[in-house]
Amino acid sequence: MLKIASAGPECVRRGLEGHLMLLRFRVTNHRSIRDTAELSLVSSGFSGARPADQDWIAATTRVAGIYGANASGKSTLLEALGFMTKAVTYSATTWGSMDRFPHHPFTLDAGSRGQTSQYELDFVLNGVRLAYGFESSVTGIHREWLYSYPTGRKRVLFERSGPSGDDLEFGRSLPGENIRIARLLRPTSLYLSTAANSNHRVLGDVHRWIAHRIRHAEYTEADRRARITWARNIMENENVLSQAVGLLKFADLGITGMVLEEEDLDEDVIQVIRGFFDNVTASEGPPRSDPDLDKILSTLKKKIKFTHSGADPKKPFLLSLEEESSGTVAWLALGVPALLALRDGNIMTVDELDASLHPRLAAALVGMFKDPELNPKGAQLIFTSHETSLLGNMPGIDLSKDEIWFTEKAADGATELFSMAEFPVRPTDNFERRYLQGRYGAVPMISPEQLRGVVLRDAR
Image 1 (cartoon, rainbow, N blue to C red):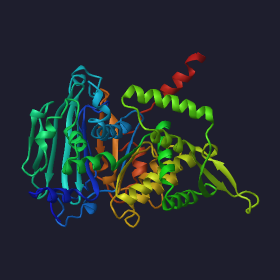
Image 2 (image 1 turned 180 degrees about the vertical axis):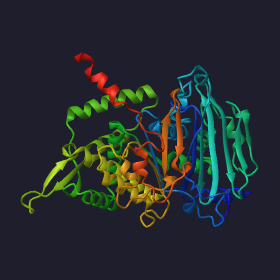
Image 3 (image 1 turned 90 degrees about the vertical axis):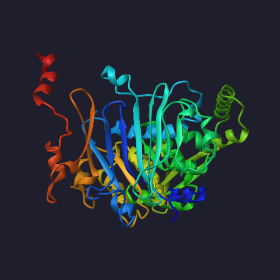
Image 4 (image 1 turned 120 degrees about the horizontal axis):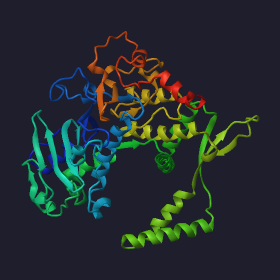
């Protein structure tokens, strides 16, 4: 297998083909995260720059569960990772017309509000470790870098020290029309995004891995609906549909099957959509073609319906997605993306994993990623949760100290992230009980007497 440090472009490109594996994510000065927070999926027992046997799956964890009190910053960590992937995806395209770069610093002290934010990923592509990151503020990109570690030592692919293309330096091991592409760079655009938009053969691969192989499931109704729409489209594949039905049967939801149907849209609805489509496309530039509108209308026509067995087993009845319980919808909206992550070896992040899911279903989802037979490609799951049974009291799930993380908000409002691996633990420890007892911190400090005072205040 040829490595990224080899001289020729084909050699470099082959080194980038393969599965993505996240090693670490670092973020500084993003919302409630003021100081650098690092989430590591590298096993604590591993040391060195790379595994001697090149087995990165054995050297990393498949799961990272993040626990903490409400408003402690659990969701902020995942949102920061999502922001980084969005910046890589859109900075040279959708965000290109913006004069300012999105900036979300820690706002509870004046010093942080005026400082830059930093985001960095360490990851592996086909056995080659890479590190990519950038530093940004509202004015644009201040720094950007991409390093490779083909033999364990850092090799610079490119480094950026300012907003323009003149601030870029390229390593000898990065082929391509780097100087020409650098002339296209805008202060608010990432060079990685600009290069991918210019069909750079090597950097385009890195861009695709970050932009498309890290999937986020946010705890919002809009995001859940978007995931359902996405799942509905890919379930036209019979294998995916069959697996989705299997997931629903496994969950014991009373569902015996699922079908995809097309329903005609009301003509008034079509005209409203067409008018909105025409107005938006006219304001954004050249008009889009009718096939774009046809694709939107076709998507809206697709409906998921579920078959249930009734009193007469020979006469099952159908229920629409809108008629199903929130638990059914939540399981479908997470289960199908999880299946695709396992199939492709992707990274999946889930905010509030236990929301609308029974603890056993949440445990089953985690177990899918931890099972090497179900997850041979090393897909990874990062989730936030309040479901403490996943810490060791749920049959079939045994999270290790490397897979458990905590967030805690300090007195000044800044989020702190730390791992259970930082604590002395024994194999016999009941992680759930010890967490609820406050042994690891990251639990709300509540006062029953203070609550009584609030409730009884009007009664006095």
